[in-house]
Image (tube, protein in one colour):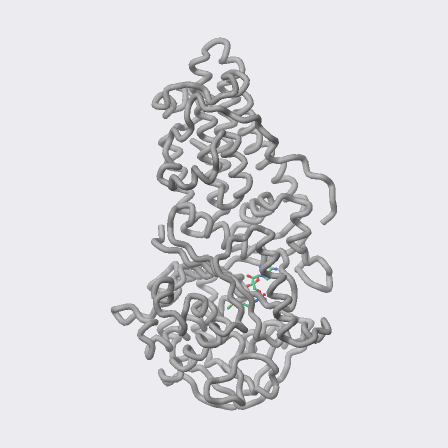
Amino acid sequence: MHTKFFVTTPIYYVNDKPHVGSTYTTVAADALARAYRLRGIPTLFLTGTDENSQKNLEAADKAGAKDLQSYLDGMALIWQKTWRELGITFDDFIRTTEERHHRAVEKFWKSVEQSGDIYKATYEREYCVGCESFKTPFDLQDGKCPLHPNRPLEKVSEENYFFRASAYAQDLLKLYHDKQDFVQPQSRQNEIRSYVKNAFEDFSISREAKKLACGISVPGDESQRIYVWFDALVNYMSAVGYGTDNKLFAKWWPATLHLVGKDIIKFHCALWPAMIMSAAKSDPSLRYANGEPKLPEHIFAHGFFTIEGQKISKSLGNAVDPLDLVKKYPFDAVRYYLLREISFGEDGDFAAQRLEDRYASDLANNLGNLVNRSVSMSRKYFDNRIPTTNIQETLRGLPETVWGGADNLEGLWQTVDQYIEASRWDMALEAIWSGEAVSLSAANKYVEQTQPFRMIKENPENAAKVLYTLLEACRHFAWMVEPVMPNVAADIIRQLGQDPETERQKGIKELKKWGGLQPGAELPEPKILFPRLENKKI
Ligand code: MSP
């Protein structure tokens, strides 16, 4: 696994509040960050808001805000509050109107300028405010932006500063070739390679200040403002002290993983590394000792969500507010559904019925039932305690049974770790639920096969072994799913008679060992982990 983990979400435009799409990226980042923290790896999880955008200006106007800044402050607070209420464990929240960000962007601009990659030219292009980007004929479908077909393009003709991006096309292609996991998943890699090969042009990186009432001024030229993407991408560096705290920057940069939606891969996988390659030529803090530029290590692009088969849009009124969602469903269940249902990297649909089906089958019937019957039977037959047995003798399942034993559980841990490293929670969860030798399903089958409620009369010693195995397996499964369902995991650990925080302090190596439960320790009365869902409309 990585030795440090610096994960980012895109910084979100504040022309609206969070919806299920932005929640998806943020939850995915949160579940990874929690997994690395649990494994004792220094972790930094960054999210934030993209505030120097024309879109925000329009939204502030529409909302009748007193002034732009108070609108931005109010919205940034809504985003922070929403993530906090959802239990998102971000370590830092960057706003691009902050002083630390302005300083970083200015330093970055000057480095690129010093490398000789900024020049002035007259530009004439169509601009899509929805995307905040210029469109080449390559980008358009029937003369319209495919992402915002109802929004007329603006014809922009002005003298701007340009970034000599095209000079880096060959270096980018070499990067994609040499580092196959730079852009993930594979399908996006092909898309980005073809873009850089065929259509990667110099970028206009400023707009006339008189036409744009927000943004950071171009250093040394007040008449121009920095283009919002050239400013926004630098957030990943400004949050870790670029231009303000060299020590912090040296500690955290480069980012381990930028999580983004597939709509913004050109900016992240092509423009951003090209910008860094250029700035690194004149800024040693952006270079490794061997002279190579410090590029982000991985960029993972997830797919797009529809809701009940329809595109998320304000006009359809289907932009589900995550805070409403958690009034109806426990957030752990929403997190589980989002990360399990959609194969990470592909498009997916958010359907309440599917969530409810998974809640009933995967959570209540499989995980909940396993914990409940293991704890209840142990309490019933062993005086409210964990059965007293020789732990060594529980390393393997009883002969001729489905349970694969502690060796296979160790294998499952390795599988889960590998999938986490590949950002694939969907696959990790599938392995935990359905893996052959050991999994939640295998544990439930083990109960059916061994029938401890019968065995207790005929062979109490074996019944003790089976029940100890099941309880200990529940402990392992709880820690495996903890990053995705932190509250559920803590509840399971408590039901096993342990304090989750004391256990966490022991470190992952201890937690992964077989035999963490003390035979004879008391088991509290179990509570239902996944109560029936009430029928409230979201
Ligand atoms: N501000 C830029 C990002 C700058 S990062 C340097 C931006 N913001 S955004 O608010 O429009 O969208 C951010 C991200 O939200 C998208 O990349 C994507 O990750 C996520 N999503 C927005 N709508 C989505 C869906 N319908 N489905 C899945 N994710 C979606 O772009």
